[in-house]
Length: 337
Image (cartoon, rainbow, N blue to C red; front, side, top):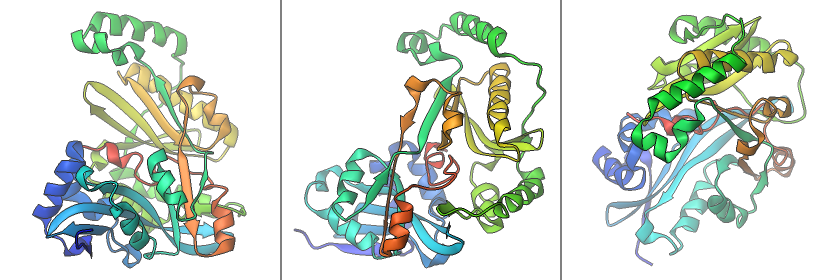
């Protein structure tokens, strides 16, 4: 095996990172190069990603995102594992396991949403997985996802289908999005209310004011983040266009009255129908919410975890309480400059 070197990302030159990202994350390499400090919340709790190099050439990265967890009323440091990558020509040579071993030394509590290939590697190191979190989608303009319609841009067909959907789903509910910048206090105050709710015996992301400041106000695409409010219930969403598809990602919902969650999501769907959104997307582990979305399109996401503390490990095996699309990088990795 060639002699390798592992460094913290802050020790690497920007041009080296850009070259590596262009090879491994071609669509979003510009976004990553410009915003990696935000992406990886670099320096929070003194944690940052690791870079694997051979002869000053980057061949791999172990990305991470530091968070704090509330576990049975105790604040616990943890990291999301994200953006783990090895250049294709160096795969299958043991570098992935070397990088994973170093990665796991950074923090005693580790969590991730991962694909089956990564899960296979993690399980060799004693990780456990849970499938309670679902990625759900509701295509509003389903024909737009059919290749022949996309190729020939058959707008008259798209418009006809959309008008039929409007007749079926349109309700007399007035709901409109508001910019995050001007309404941060409202959102922060609502999160404080949630923080004071009844405690539970499970792990939950601590979404405090510092976390909200980082995730929303410092976000490089904050101009595309909005919130909806309906009967004292609210949702944070990301509205953007990728290719020729206009998406609305529901990042987070909070309802003072739980039965109103579905009503809130349906209201957002109605707004989407009337504002030319093609796809509504959501990540959640609320079984009641799943019923709103087409079951055939719902997909379980691998949530994997590891902890050096046996008690914490057992709690994490049950998944995260209130896991949503605002967590980890399931939404942010869709951002392209």
